[in-house]
Length: 116
Image (cartoon, rainbow, N blue to C red; front, side, top):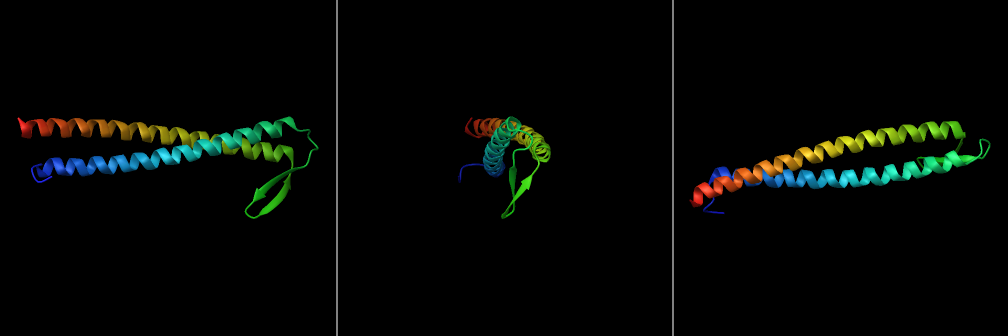
């Protein structure tokens, strides 16, 4: 690290920061994907049941009875919200990947200039 110019050290620090941000975004994206899959499965199951079949949902620490229509409405809303969140995380991941690629190229060209 001692032979590396301060500019390059700063770029390396920035690169490390972007990589950490990327890891967090990937973890969030995975959690959202799991939640989205669960919501879609629940939606499929509720659509299969008869209209008068009792449906229960959890609210905090309580389990409450709900109508099929209300449960369907809430789940569709949840799926929609999660899909929007997932798209936003995917865009964020793409931007971070682009920044990491650019920084890596900057660092490599800076180091070539120092070595050459």
